[in-house]
Image 1 (cartoon, rainbow, N blue to C red):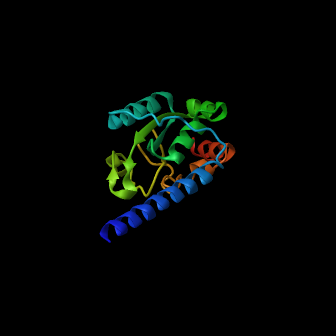
Image 2: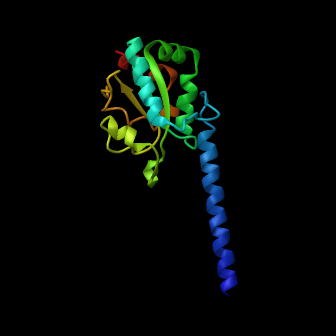
Image 3: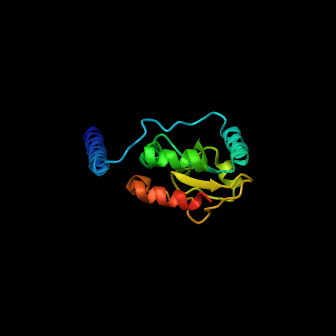
Length: 168
Protein backbone atom coordinates (compact mmCIF):
# COMPACT_ATOMS: atom_id res chain seq x y z
CA UNK A 1 0.00 0.00 0.00
CA UNK A 2 2.77 2.45 0.92
CA UNK A 3 4.68 1.50 -2.22
CA UNK A 4 1.55 2.19 -4.33
CA UNK A 5 1.05 5.59 -2.67
CA UNK A 6 4.70 6.51 -3.24
CA UNK A 7 4.45 5.43 -6.88
CA UNK A 8 1.25 7.45 -7.29
CA UNK A 9 2.85 10.50 -5.65
CA UNK A 10 5.93 10.22 -7.86
CA UNK A 11 3.71 9.95 -10.93
CA UNK A 12 1.74 13.05 -9.96
CA UNK A 13 4.96 15.00 -9.30
CA UNK A 14 6.41 13.92 -12.65
CA UNK A 15 3.22 14.91 -14.47
CA UNK A 16 3.23 18.32 -12.80
CA UNK A 17 6.87 18.87 -13.79
CA UNK A 18 6.14 17.91 -17.40
CA UNK A 19 3.12 20.22 -17.55
CA UNK A 20 5.12 23.10 -16.05
CA UNK A 21 7.90 22.50 -18.57
CA UNK A 22 5.42 22.44 -21.43
CA UNK A 23 3.85 25.69 -20.21
CA UNK A 24 7.27 27.38 -20.01
CA UNK A 25 8.33 26.10 -23.44
CA UNK A 26 5.08 27.17 -25.09
CA UNK A 27 5.20 30.65 -23.57
CA UNK A 28 8.92 31.10 -24.16
CA UNK A 29 8.62 29.95 -27.77
CA UNK A 30 6.55 33.08 -28.53
CA UNK A 31 9.57 35.29 -27.87
CA UNK A 32 11.27 36.17 -31.13
CA UNK A 33 13.71 38.86 -30.02
CA UNK A 34 17.43 38.52 -29.41
CA UNK A 35 18.65 36.70 -26.35
CA UNK A 36 22.20 36.58 -25.06
CA UNK A 37 23.42 33.02 -24.64
CA UNK A 38 24.84 33.96 -21.28
CA UNK A 39 24.37 36.91 -19.00
CA UNK A 40 27.98 37.95 -18.42
CA UNK A 41 28.77 38.85 -14.82
CA UNK A 42 31.90 39.60 -12.83
CA UNK A 43 33.40 38.39 -9.58
CA UNK A 44 33.96 42.02 -8.53
CA UNK A 45 30.58 43.68 -8.98
CA UNK A 46 31.30 46.54 -6.56
CA UNK A 47 34.57 47.29 -8.37
CA UNK A 48 32.85 47.14 -11.75
CA UNK A 49 30.24 49.67 -10.60
CA UNK A 50 32.93 51.97 -9.17
CA UNK A 51 34.91 51.73 -12.44
CA UNK A 52 31.79 52.54 -14.48
CA UNK A 53 31.06 55.58 -12.30
CA UNK A 54 34.63 56.79 -12.84
CA UNK A 55 34.37 56.30 -16.62
CA UNK A 56 31.01 58.11 -16.62
CA UNK A 57 32.61 61.09 -14.86
CA UNK A 58 35.44 61.15 -17.41
CA UNK A 59 33.14 60.85 -20.44
CA UNK A 60 30.16 62.86 -19.08
CA UNK A 61 27.83 59.88 -19.51
CA UNK A 62 25.57 57.89 -17.21
CA UNK A 63 25.87 54.38 -15.85
CA UNK A 64 23.45 51.73 -17.07
CA UNK A 65 23.49 49.18 -14.26
CA UNK A 66 21.63 45.99 -15.19
CA UNK A 67 21.02 43.76 -12.18
CA UNK A 68 19.87 40.33 -13.36
CA UNK A 69 20.89 36.69 -13.62
CA UNK A 70 21.85 33.92 -16.05
CA UNK A 71 18.84 31.79 -15.14
CA UNK A 72 16.46 34.65 -16.02
CA UNK A 73 14.98 34.71 -19.52
CA UNK A 74 14.17 38.42 -19.24
CA UNK A 75 17.74 39.24 -18.14
CA UNK A 76 19.17 37.38 -21.12
CA UNK A 77 16.59 38.97 -23.43
CA UNK A 78 17.53 42.46 -22.25
CA UNK A 79 21.24 41.64 -22.66
CA UNK A 80 20.43 40.47 -26.19
CA UNK A 81 18.51 43.66 -26.99
CA UNK A 82 21.43 45.74 -25.69
CA UNK A 83 23.69 43.96 -28.23
CA UNK A 84 21.58 45.02 -31.22
CA UNK A 85 23.10 47.68 -33.44
CA UNK A 86 20.59 50.37 -32.53
CA UNK A 87 20.73 49.91 -28.76
CA UNK A 88 24.46 49.21 -28.67
CA UNK A 89 25.04 52.55 -30.40
CA UNK A 90 22.94 54.42 -27.85
CA UNK A 91 24.55 52.63 -24.92
CA UNK A 92 28.12 53.16 -26.12
CA UNK A 93 27.47 56.87 -26.72
CA UNK A 94 25.45 57.72 -23.59
CA UNK A 95 26.22 55.06 -20.95
CA UNK A 96 28.77 52.95 -19.16
CA UNK A 97 27.17 49.49 -19.10
CA UNK A 98 27.57 47.16 -16.12
CA UNK A 99 25.93 43.78 -15.57
CA UNK A 100 25.61 42.56 -11.97
CA UNK A 101 24.43 39.09 -10.95
CA UNK A 102 21.82 39.27 -8.21
CA UNK A 103 20.86 35.60 -8.04
CA UNK A 104 17.24 35.02 -6.97
CA UNK A 105 16.38 37.78 -4.48
CA UNK A 106 12.67 37.04 -4.77
CA UNK A 107 13.37 33.60 -3.24
CA UNK A 108 15.80 34.75 -0.57
CA UNK A 109 18.94 33.78 -2.51
CA UNK A 110 20.15 37.20 -3.58
CA UNK A 111 23.67 38.33 -4.43
CA UNK A 112 25.19 41.81 -4.61
CA UNK A 113 22.03 43.35 -3.14
CA UNK A 114 24.13 45.92 -1.27
CA UNK A 115 24.74 47.60 -4.63
CA UNK A 116 21.02 48.25 -5.06
CA UNK A 117 20.78 49.56 -1.48
CA UNK A 118 23.79 51.79 -2.16
CA UNK A 119 21.70 53.60 -4.76
CA UNK A 120 18.51 53.78 -2.71
CA UNK A 121 16.65 50.59 -3.65
CA UNK A 122 15.71 48.56 -0.59
CA UNK A 123 14.13 45.66 -2.42
CA UNK A 124 14.61 43.95 -5.77
CA UNK A 125 11.40 42.00 -6.39
CA UNK A 126 12.69 40.10 -9.43
CA UNK A 127 15.04 40.25 -12.38
CA UNK A 128 16.24 42.17 -14.24
CA UNK A 129 16.40 45.61 -12.69
CA UNK A 130 17.78 48.55 -14.65
CA UNK A 131 19.34 51.40 -12.70
CA UNK A 132 20.38 54.56 -14.51
CA UNK A 133 22.93 56.50 -12.47
CA UNK A 134 24.60 59.86 -12.84
CA UNK A 135 28.39 59.83 -12.59
CA UNK A 136 28.10 60.86 -8.94
CA UNK A 137 25.85 57.92 -8.14
CA UNK A 138 22.39 59.50 -8.15
CA UNK A 139 19.63 57.11 -9.22
CA UNK A 140 17.82 58.77 -12.11
CA UNK A 141 14.99 56.25 -12.58
CA UNK A 142 14.03 55.22 -9.05
CA UNK A 143 10.39 54.92 -10.12
CA UNK A 144 11.09 52.44 -12.96
CA UNK A 145 14.31 50.66 -11.98
CA UNK A 146 12.51 47.55 -10.71
CA UNK A 147 9.91 47.35 -13.49
CA UNK A 148 11.99 45.47 -16.07
CA UNK A 149 10.85 41.93 -15.23
CA UNK A 150 9.02 41.95 -18.57
CA UNK A 151 12.08 42.86 -20.65
CA UNK A 152 11.49 39.98 -23.07
CA UNK A 153 8.04 41.41 -23.80
CA UNK A 154 9.33 44.87 -24.61
CA UNK A 155 10.11 45.93 -28.15
CA UNK A 156 13.44 47.31 -29.26
CA UNK A 157 11.80 50.69 -29.79
CA UNK A 158 10.27 50.76 -26.31
CA UNK A 159 13.62 49.91 -24.72
CA UNK A 160 15.42 52.44 -26.89
CA UNK A 161 12.92 55.19 -26.12
CA UNK A 162 13.14 54.64 -22.36
CA UNK A 163 16.94 54.51 -22.30
CA UNK A 164 17.20 57.54 -24.60
CA UNK A 165 14.91 59.54 -22.32
CA UNK A 166 17.05 58.62 -19.28
CA UNK A 167 20.38 59.36 -20.96
CA UNK A 168 20.36 63.00 -19.86
